[in-house]
Amino acid sequence: RRVERYCILTAIDLLLHTLRANMYIPKGKTIWTEDTKMTRFERDYKDAEEGNGIEVITKRRAEIEKLTHEGKHCKNSFRRTCIAQDVVRLKTELEKIEELF
Image (cartoon, rainbow, N blue to C red):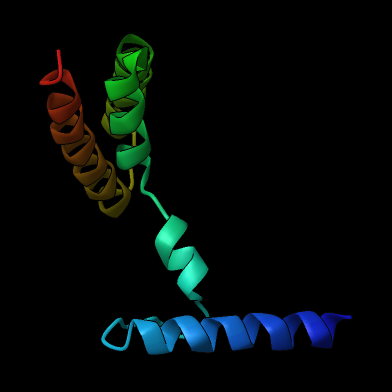
C-alpha cells in the first residue's frame, strides 16, 4: 500500500510539476507543501483580518515581553543576540498587524 500511495503521489506531483514548469521545489518537499505552507505571521495576519485581532495582538505582546525578559537574563551572548533578532522581527510584525486597526 505504501508503494502504491507513493507511486500515485509521485505521478500527481510529476503532472503538477509539468504544469508549473518554472517552479522550484526543494529536495524533500512536494508541490502540496509549497502551496499550503503559511508562516505564523501570515496566519496571524489572516486571523486579524477576520476579526480576531485583539487575541492575536495580546498573544504577540506577551511573547515579546517573555522574550525580552529572557534576553535580559541570558548569560550567553550568542543566544542573547538571537533573542534580540526575534524580538525585533516580532515587533515589526506586530506593527503590521496593528495597522489593520
